[in-house]
Length: 405
Image (tube, rainbow, N blue to C red):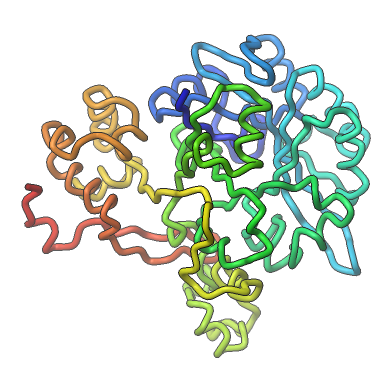
């Protein structure tokens, strides 16, 4: 069966999240977005775990359901520790095949952190000491580095990350079969590292509010079974793991280098000329994902290795509507138009990926034009930097005058 999965989200028990990140809200928005399988997020939090335990129904090995939406048990862990005389900060996604095994994971992690403080607990101990304890519970516990390139809290982050998977995980390197690319990088950027050729690339929303789920995701064509999903990911089987759904990476908030307080945004080539020093405040710039990849890459930009999982770049439907009618994405008018499109055309990802432009035009000709421009990649983007999201321009004055057909 074909289905779209978004594995990495957060519950309302994580900091800076919407109160609607509950099972009811997640199930509702999964249907609106077109997501069939959602990560639960935050199963380490005792209150959220209790809600999951009371409300989820087991459907298949490692797959649960609530109100006709399927869930897989996931949580994000923050490790902060010193390794090789350097402070390391790394976020990992943990996948558990059952509530029973998730409970055992929580028992172990609870020895190192107060799990009730935050849905994403912080552990001040080396992951090389903690992860083996989890793998002893079950070989079906999987660990995937989250948003692998963001400057802080990531595997390859410029501020506190590592230069390779081997440096980070040492003797446990063979346990790491995939990374999450994050909003500020896409597959072609990762393909520039030959060391990642055998590493699968997955994409997830890291959503903190229901309307953000599915902004990045993964398309599968396989049985919705924990083991088969991970076999498809590990093997990079293009017949079962069809493609990833990506932001345009420039829209991510750590794509370029810069200083947001100084309104300075720089391409890595410009940063290098300035020796990575902000021309305004004279302090070190926040080094973005593009720069960090340039440092670690051993291939030229544009290299495409054979047999990698395909990808597609999308712009969220709300953004397209907002630009089509020249309103803020959060405005009531945009929200009303968004729901009108969903009611007439189906879920968001189906509209963005598959619906005929002529069908969309019957509901909104301007939005149809925006989706066509997005599919044709005829858009411009001001790249994000230092925590500031990039800005997409779909329509210019000339395109506003062009007929669709």
